[in-house]
Length: 416
Image 1 (cartoon, rainbow, N blue to C red):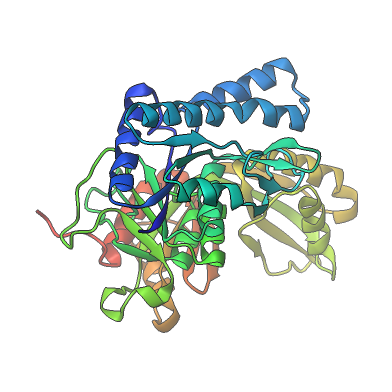
Image 2: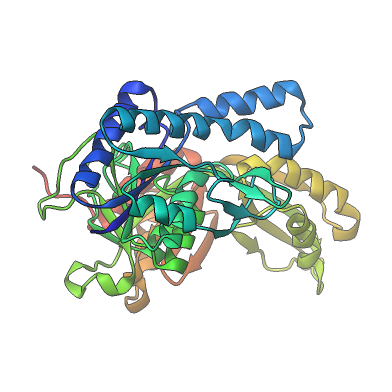
């Protein structure tokens, strides 16, 4: 007997027929002798609808009341799934975030989980009752409902799996696993049977939409084995695997390793350039300190060689959703920074090459730069980590860049 957490996203829960499909999958795991906890998202589109109501009610809504409203979507699906399971003869009950409880901090709308008390959950599972838990929500000091931010149900599922010491956490989505790149751009992209936590964390952070970044970081910290698989397709690969396992590097043997694991792209980037910034100690700090104070994450940074006039240009990227706030912050700090002009561009995209094989192989960045150069694609900025190289390019070249890099690194599947 194993403990398993099954998480189902919004498309999987979109209507009673799909909820019945989810219940049937849960029933199969129960009949196989497993203790099962299920974490569910709201029905597809429901959270957006609830967010819209909050914005209509007030543009300056109270984040505490916002969390009360938007957490309702998961409460509905958890109750409906419990009812459906009971109708199928499977003992089940729903547990809201405050009933377990899932304790969080008080950062409403983007709360972080502190601890989960599983004592009541353990008793229920031991009695053969399936626990259905609404994702995305918890409870803060003062018994206030909190939510974890968009995509937070993935984090809920991993946190529950860690707390109840589950054998693995299965994330059911509308895709059948993690691919070497977006199959809609590259039809010959390959599904990966295993990916390391580090690689998945990098892929998630640079644009791959399969898992929320926070959930992968938590899985790596707590060593929770995660499997990504489809709610609608039971197909297995040539090795008999379903989905993609996200595990520690020690679980992937040398024969399975490859230099590059995947190519990711992200169009949700905005480029900002400050011209004629004084070339003196502390000048760059005066740019990024107010952005950090405003909670704005800066990604790529390029500082040009100083002009003979004693000034330089500084270019960096921020999430496109934070562009307006970034410009406002920089304009208010213009006197302290002392820049010339403030220029921005949203017609850019970040392309990233990810793979643990980079640690022991030279030439990965060179291949990327030469491949893009051969197609006339100009690189606007570069950033690297131990297992990632990212470049900023003009948005119009996104799909071409992904395709040629996928081929250059030998990731294309063999023609059928």
